[in-house]
Image (cartoon, rainbow, N blue to C red; front, side, top):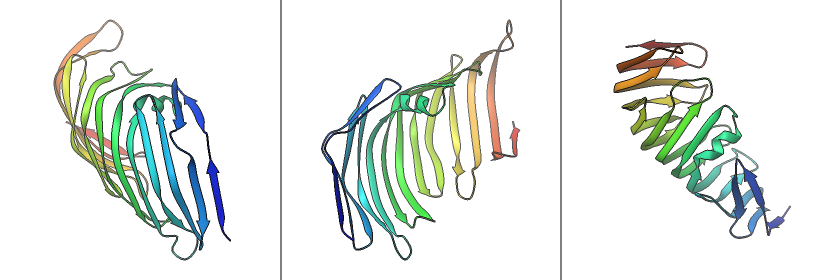
Length: 203
């Protein structure tokens, strides 16, 4: 079976960020292998290119590469309680198989900001680098500002099987207005260890 497909024009809008293909999207199937020959999306603070192959038989071997810049405002599309801005530059390679992908790459956060509707403090001026190696995301360096002070985030998270994490947060002169009418300023030295079902906060 040999299949060849081309999408000349694609446009989408998510949270006010308009995306479109900068060139025709081309996909083909040959010798039981899906090949992404061309994928190039562009938009506000967003550039995304990808290509590679996925096997349809045997071990379902993958060889995919993706790189570019993503607007963090797109995160609001997944959760309406999130307000975010800034952008992430990334370079990712995916090998291995569909059942056990081997992901390697780097993500750089630039002037990011994120806040939750139900949380009194948000994060701004988020800058740093995250390294992805197989099933682990390692914080190489990550800083942000909240409550008028600066925090430093370290540690790592794994995502297969299940999500687990070991994260540290340190900061000075952090102001939090909670509960209503109460303002507290503190230094932080915290460690969060566990998974989504059971975790321990200490410090």
